[in-house]
Length: 270
Image (cartoon, rainbow, N blue to C red):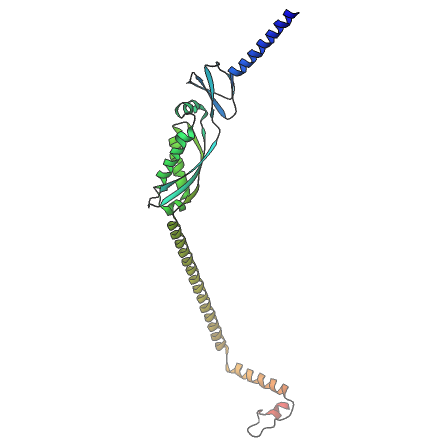
């Protein structure tokens, strides 16, 4: 019984040791989602790109290295000079990913550090090259064109290294204080000029309205003068006399002298 128990204990210990060795040596490697694997044998990378899943490796001799192929974001800033020699401080953001089929190239040629090895220098060079083509004012007014030209340069540079540019954005342009003051003064002058032009247009419209109104009134008076005839004048006099008789109380006014104001009053009453 003692011998049997001893053998069982030895086997148990041996099994535990084997399990520990298996975990320690890790004969299997896993490539998670968003990554590709590159197997190295004594440091030498294989040309095969390993997809997501579990892969066998020779313990101690081989190692499974992971290359991130998901979309990554990088931000940076730096100074450049515009075509009119204004200092421009630019902040940019870049979304990129490693082509899955280029995982071995990125691992071997870029040390699995594409951001530091190629992306940051390429972004800085592209931003400086494109910024030098525009004046400071054009960088503001033609921001979309500036961005498109930077993207074109980046895609050409990074494609050679198996990197795809997904999106590029110019977060901000900053200029010197003196240039900002000059832009503000120019904007204020343009606004004042625009206001003066609007005021002039308003004055011209109001003047034309007054001329049109005066012309209409003159034409109306002319028409009225044309319609005045001796018969109309006589009719207006008779209407005035009739209205005066209707208002008369039958008493003649007390006057110290002078003519009586109503002529033929008695005949009119009869």
